[in-house]
Length: 89
Image 1 (tube, rainbow, N blue to C red):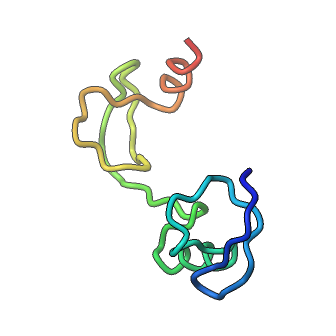
Image 2 (cartoon, helix red, strand yellow; image 1 turned 180 degrees about the horizontal axis):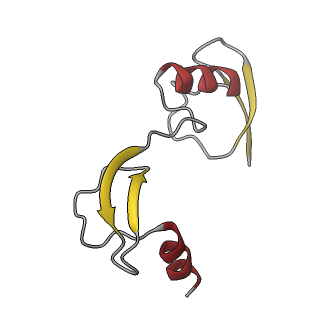
C-alpha cells in the first residue's frame, strides 16, 4: 500500500492510502466513488454474463453449454474439469 495525502476527484474526500502509486493525481477516486462508478458502468465483479452455446471440450469431448466469454475459436475449449486439471498439471 502507498500512503499519501490525496483527494477524491468525485467527492473531495481525503485519500490516505492506495493499493498503487498514482502517476497522475487529478482523477483519483475514493473507495465509495470507485464502487459507484463500477456499478453505473455495469462492470460490478459480482455480475457475470454467461454465453449460451453448443460446444464440445477439446480434452474429453464433454458438451459445454455455457461460457463466461464469447469464444473466437472453438477448437481449444475445455470443460471445467479439464480446465482445472490443466491448471494443476
